[in-house]
Length: 107
Image 1 (cartoon, rainbow, N blue to C red):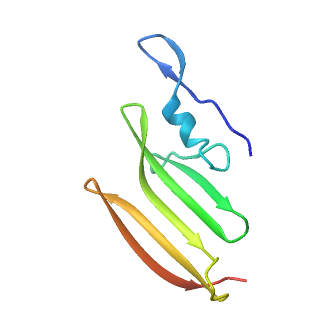
Image 2: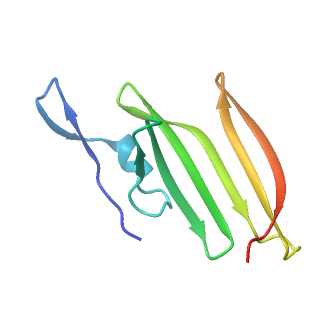
């Protein structure tokens, strides 16, 4: 998988400087560069393990640092071949809220 070193512009230094925090969002087992959702002002990073486990993470930017606010895992590795388990974690008022549901697999 590709990995990226991310630089952000520093007004204080008047140049681009390396950002460990943003570089981490593009690495750490993720599928390369994150996407930008300009309308919602979020970064979106994707991860997967084979065909049957996918994760989407969303980040907001606070003080030039990414903060994860959403994680959605689609897990089709469970024993029932007709269902996919969807686990959603949202950051609400500083606390993670987790929900789970099963949906029919789309073939």
